[in-house]
Length: 223
Image (cartoon, one colour):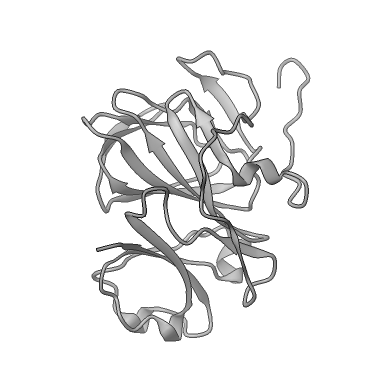
C-alpha cells in the first residue's frame, strides 16, 4: 500500500482459478462453498508451519478447527485453538495461525463479504509480505463445485480431498438429525449485511435456536 498498490476485488465470473487447489508455502487451501455474500475454505497447514501475520480490511472471518493443534496469534496476544474450537476475527485485525501439533492442522475459514483478494500481509517467514494473494494451483483432482438452486449464485464442494468430512446446505427446518455434525454456519442475509458470522456447535445446539427459513452450511464427519 505504501508503494501505491491498491487492494483488488474478486471477480466472481472470471476468477475461476480460485476454485482450484491453491498451493501455499505452509500447505494448501481450497474453496468448499461460495455465494454472493459468503466464502468458505478448507485450510491444511503442515506441522511447524504458519500463515503470515495478515489482516482483511473489509471482511469478517471465522476460523473453525476440524483437526489438530494450533496457536492463534494477533499483534498483542496468543492462545490455543484445538479440535472443535472456533474463533471470530474482526476485520482489520492482524492475525496468524501456527500448527503446533505433529499432524496437519485442518481448518475451515468463513469470510464475509466474499473477496479473496482482501488481504494485507505485514510479516511472513516465506517472504510474501506486501504481495497479493497467490494463484498457483496444485495438480490434484478435486470434487467439482456444484451449483445450488435454492441460493442465488451459490456453489458447494460436498466433500474434502480425502473424504473425511462432508459439507452440505440445509434449511433450518430440515436440520433435525445432528449425528456426526461438527459445525453449523448461518448463511442468513441479515447476518451477512451486519457482517455477523454465526457459528454453532453441531452436537450441543438446540434445534429451536435455528431460523426455520434460513439456510445453513453444515460440516459433518464421514464414518
